[in-house]
Length: 344
Image (cartoon, rainbow, N blue to C red; front, side, top):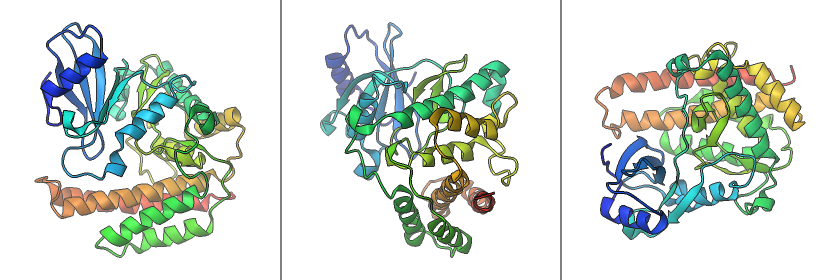
């Protein structure tokens, strides 16, 4: 294992000694998830004990977008629920220790299925079990009453989709250098067709297969990446899960995701399983998939702009900019297809 930017080794090790019993030198750190999101490091001692450390990206970041205390609070609140999350070691909010707040949790063994090739090592029966467990875990999350686990004040309960539509359109208005008439037209349709929110619950914000640690035999071992979690319309989570699942009839925009592999439940089976276990009315689900797809197109436009301006330092920026532009067009087409399914 190698040390990586983002860890002040002497001070972090000293903090670990105060929070972990029987730590055995040497302590090693390795970056296992990075980029523009929060950073995750694997921590290992000489005895083979493992933990995960989460911190914001290095450099200038918006504190509100990378709130370690908030992530820690959410995982802590879910410790004794039916939603599997890692066991926490502690939160350090003293920036003098590591340049930014961080928290440490137990390392959960398992596999993260990030792409289609990764499914080659997963037996067919485990693929189905993974898909079904992913749905059941989402239902369990959405059944939690936020106030009962101390999260009643995590965010505004109502008007979730409307707030999201305003937020991501503002990003387009302030950050894009193109007219993007298609995305703006979709925004108007999404505003006009918005369904009534069915209550409020805990919304993960980015729930999909590769944001969970999976037991190799199938069950969800731990739900990860809670940085976008808030309160609101839980069907937005299901819409995002269905979007990422891959639908050959919706423009093939997700044709390379792992869940299109043989053995995983179909999109319809995912929807039917959620409906049966949650008892929720899913007649408006196509709207939520369209909304999730439009939101992803807006996020992708932000990434495209950063590459176009050379902010990412990638030598192949021009090719990537073109690819991202084409992907945005495909996402917009997919959102239109889902909107056309409303009421069908």
